Length: 396
Image 1 (cartoon, rainbow, N blue to C red):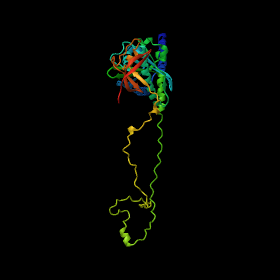
Image 2 (cartoon, rainbow, N blue to C red; image 1 turned 90 degrees about the vertical axis):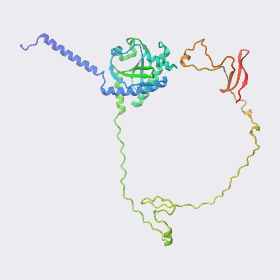
Image 3 (cartoon, rainbow, N blue to C red; image 1 turned 135 degrees about the vertical axis):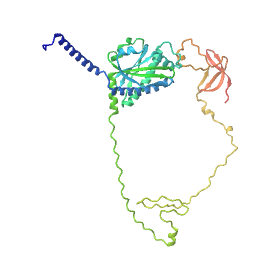
Image 4 (spheres, helix red, strand yellow; image 1 turned 90 degrees about the horizontal axis):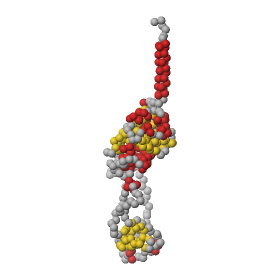
């Protein structure tokens, strides 16, 4: 009532000031970790083009239709990612080494990786492996290497400068908190850009894929993207066509004097003679064109003379000099049999594996010369070496 403030009121006011200051500082610092709507749209457009190229590459690897939808761009923290993404999953780290600095992370579900690697190894994707082995991790790294390599090529064309990546590394993670923080960099401590895609592979996969960018890298991409667009180039002025000028007055032509009979026999100017087509009229100011036929020169033409064909020559009876090629070496191959295996079956080879061939026991063995079947025979043993006894010569 006396206009004086109590100690509690003073403390409350100072507390509000401190809260306001801290809120302002935190909002300003968080402002450094956000993207403007224009930057989010640009990152979405860049990711859309790059992942579209990557989807085409993945199609060539798995021989299945691959569909990746338009991305959704948002700002995310590590805690939010841990809470929303299911485990186990595969983390694939891709580092840029030319053009831009930084790395990004692709996150795939474990079941999706199993299907992709099974398709790459010759399977049909319906019976993938129970667990991911080193072979599967190498296969998914190779797939991501080709996908992101083609994506970097598209990015290079978009930004107008060379962009290159280092070979990616993959890691199977059951608990996201167990990811090696040394590989994550600022992802573990700072907010980052999350680009979310829906991914479909034939009728086998209907899932999602995530791509994570550091905010600094996203802003760098935006800056390069804007500068690559640049200001529209000024249109090259097209020179105005010269104004048509009045055609020059044609030079008076003096017609030769002719008799009335000659004038009656000659056609009028610009009109065809009877039975002849209408010729193009000369342009104004150009001299009249006349048809002139040079006099024919006398040519001494004679009928060609051919030597009579001798029916008595028989090429079969001619002596061929085959001695010229007698010392030409040829490769002789004895083929026991053949079979075809998928990459998956070949990778399962081990000492003691039996491979069944297409030959039946006791069937003659093929003898090939430079890859061409010329004979059949049976296997014999000559001292300590194998040999082949020819039993039949193939006739063409």
